[in-house]
Image 1: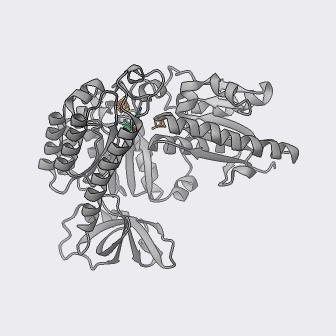
Image 2: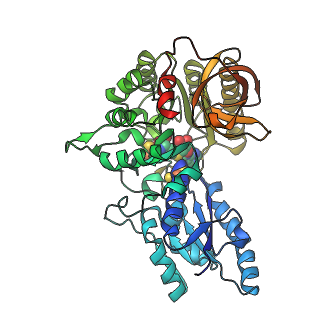
Image 3: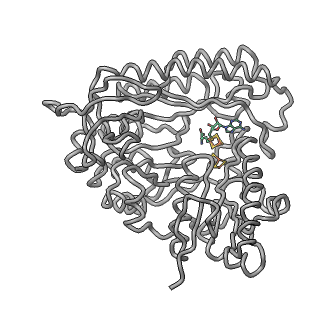
Length: 466
Ligand code: SAH
Ligand code: SF4
Ligand code: F3S
């Protein structure tokens, strides 16, 4: 028997890339590859890249420089090391990558991962292989489902892609170009995936998509199902203690999603709802197709359905033409909404997007200052949100052993890490924890006696999860 070949994948960017990396591992397992954490002992290294901002893209080339040295060493030792570039840079730049970095053997875009085994054979025969076209076939259909062992080794929480691509064309964003048009997976496939994951110990499912609440997959009844209806169906699968979804767009928040938050205890009350800016003028220039008030109204609908709901968001500062007043409107929106967490970025022009041609560039120093002010405000909100948990009892889904002996780590409904000293058999269960303190971003606490009357969401699911 030939020894297994070793595969190392390095992922950048969003959750979709993390998920895709697992799909590539599953696909290549069929070709005799096993994963390794060390690039230098790998027979195949895949860089799973992100094109969202300039820095993210440039990282790929510096990493390829390092890999070239490793590959040369391997060749000197009489070993073969193939290098593949996958992800959104592969999609956006295609052949240009091989021109800039001849050490690369395979370039494969996100729509073509099921062709990886074939591409590797082609690269061996011809010296290189390229596949960055959007195939018209059902790109979701070809990949093998992960084996039970593979699922178990991945733990308690898993991503499931339900939708891919985006038709929104925000003027700053590369995603519609790198991930293509919006496509939704059929409901039955998603149910099968979630049931398989739950059967193998997964307790928390995060449905992912570039625009996840634009989901409109075909249901078993032949009709198009919205995300809310899908969530309702998935919540009924035995073993599923927690459901989440990411990333959503404020324009696609249908009533069925709001109702799902009202009706489904398993659906966690934490929603990532990027707004990007608080200025209507900038939102229009970004082609977000919503105003700041539209966004406030969406938040109000969520809050009316579930009081304890919290939000996170993404912001871009220094979009072309952003004046001080526009930026103040963003600060005002943040102050008014109150976020549990948020990501903020300096605008980065992306080749081929409409905003890259906009002239009114915000000076770098001004951008830095705005970013700092926004991040300070968000930090204050986030730490107030985290501190508010101290002294209360909250449900935690336990995921793994902590760094210190005897410590087990889990997450609250709001994804805050929580640590307790307990036996490892609590892993996979949702249990109430009395929170004593906060250390940086982690909560420390003790397992609490069960509530006399468990009213909370996930608690009632514990019996299934246990
Ligand atoms: N689908 C998600 C966004 C995915 S990209 C959504 O619609 O919200 C993640 C975040 O990166 C975006 O929300 C945006 O804040 C940021 N981003 C995207 N393009 C960018 C650019 N050109 N410059 C700076 N930040 C950008
Ligand atoms: Fe990009 Fe806008 Fe689509 Fe989000 S909605 S992926 S920001 S184009
Ligand atoms: Fe990056 Fe592509 Fe995701 S550009 S953010 S890896 S969709």
